Each structure stands twice: as C-alpha cells, then as structure tokens.
Image 1 (cartoon, rainbow, N blue to C red):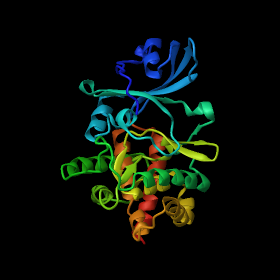
Image 2 (cartoon, helix red, strand yellow):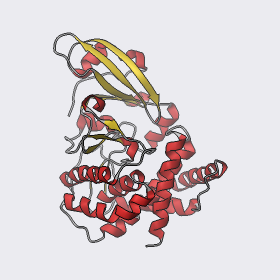
Image 3 (cartoon, rainbow, N blue to C red):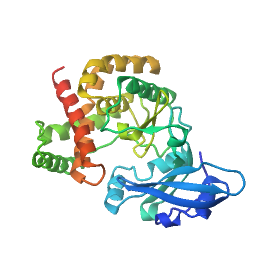
Length: 332
C-alpha cells in the first residue's frame, strides 16, 4: 500500500523533478518524458536523474486518456481501479511491475500510476501479434494460480468490484456488436456469429463469473498486458481488476495468447496444470472454461467498434482467436 499525497498531473509537462521526487520519495533533479503512447490510457517512459541516493533510471507512468476513453472506463467502474489497487490494495503474489505511486482526481475523471519499467531487469513486452508459446502460457497460468489461490473466497478491498453487466447494458452492448460486425465485414473480415448470440453470451458470462468461489482477478490478461522476464510471464495494466471466478482470467488468457492450433492441442493440459498449481479441482472446470470465449469475443468486438482503444491489427488478431474458441466450444 502506498500513501504518499500526490497531485494528478493535467498534462505530461507537469511531471517535473519536484513531482517525481514526491512520487518516488527521493530527490529527483532531472525528469524527461519520452515515448508517449495514447490508447485506452496515455502512457510514457520517464527518464530520471537524482541527487543523493539513486533510484530507477526510468519509470513507466500511466495517466488518463481521451475524454471518450475516460467515460467508457467510468461506465465499467475501471477508471481508478489500478490507482486504487496501488494505493489501497494488498501485495500481489505474482510477477508484476513494482508500483511506486498513484493518485486519483475524481472531479476530473483522472488518475495516474507510476510503476517500474520492467525492461530495466530484462522484461520483454508481449503482443497479440506474436502469439505466446505453450510454455509461456503455462508460466503465466502458474502466476495467475498464485494470485487466485491467495485470495480464494477471501475478503477483498471495497474498491474491488464483481463482474456486473445488468439489463441496462443490453441495448448498448448489442448496438456495439452490430456496429463491430458491420465494420468487420467492410474490412473484409466477416464473422459468422450474430450480434444477439454474442450479446446474450457476453452478459451471461458476467453473471456466471460472479457465482461460485470468488477471488481477485486481473480481469484483462490478454498478451498485450503481459511481459516475459526469464522463464516467467508477468502481468501489468490492472485497470480491470475485479473479483470473480478463477476461470475468467484462465479462459481469457488462454484463448487470447495462443495460436488457434496450439490452443486446440494443449488447452486441456494447460488447464490441468493451472488447477494443479491452484491446489483445487472444481468438478465443473472444463465446462466452465469452455463458456469463457464469448466474453473475450464481446469485449474485443466492443474495442474494435470504438476504434480508439487498441490498434487495428491487434484487434483483428485477438477477435480471430476468441471467435475460433467460441466456435469450438459450440461443438463440445
């Protein structure tokens, strides 16, 4: 838990040596913002120099993105979730970037998180455009098992919300799916799954994920939110941290990270390996796992429809994997 009082910057120019000194708890003499990228949030690397005891040469900083993105994250209850996790949350028992500081400004729908740049210890960011190997996915599932086991049916901080998509979401979600499917057809990537089927499965999965033993979830463990360091796969971007069923993270990570062929060949063994690491054997593990892809498919179709959260090629690659997993599950 980090308790330093830190103002939320209005723009990148406010990440001054004084601001970084407060964030890191040491005297920073120089701070240079580099590599700014705008997506769901805005993020940058900040290069640092110190007076006295040295700190990290670089840190990674995330702050709020465009207004539309902030509104969307607000609707999901996710705008401040990662910052709240840093400020109020428990120690996470899996590989993740070390957190240095966080702050929120609810009036401006704004938040900021300062964290470790994992490349300084050899971390390599993963991407949906380069599917993970079976060994990498097994390593990532082992990390998720440690997280889920520690918080299995345990009390969680108040800011950690359950998965919830009520009836009011139905027309909004369906309109997004219709738009996404039309957009896919125009782009030459038609999908043979209807908007109604996706909408029902999408909301239905949210209900299922809120039943049974509950634990702490990453919530959005696609490969673009992971990195590899040595033989370990770590997880960053905790914007959608949630409480829910273990199988949400497992199904989402598996389907989005592997090639379709690798998933089909290895998913049973990978699921069994995860359950061994978890130390539990739910009787309905396989049927539950097979119901997960429609949520990932729906989430990425909404991302594709919005057009501002993720690059085009990343959306298409991820949608293809989730759609194939959903089709496969139909025939079980």
